[in-house]
Length: 125
Image (cartoon, rainbow, N blue to C red; front, side, top):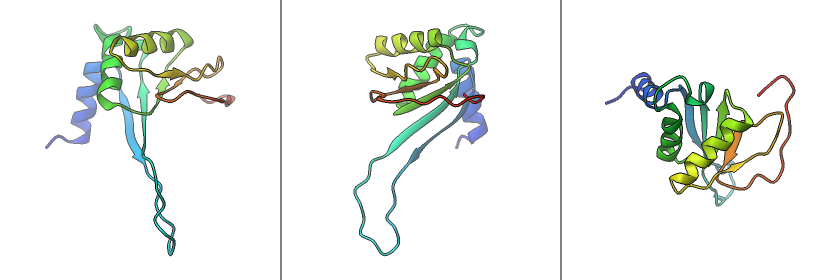
């Protein structure tokens, strides 16, 4: 059995960055109500540490990690518009389509689904 810390270390070494957390969210029925249909949304928070530039193979490792996890939404810490563009290109090279949130002040979100609206959060990214 692999412990969480060991897994994080392996992913960080592979990607050249630390993986902070990945998980899913599901809608649950309210007490006394009928069971609604629901969908699962898989979210990945990923610190890409200078776009993987400080580790040999880091840039490819970022795309490989996203491809392996297959998240619906990815939040990229330490991101820039250029890093988002290269990550999207690297994912496209792997046959995956992700969309940029096209937010110039907070470019840190990509999604498997088109982003139709975005907001900026001052002093927080």
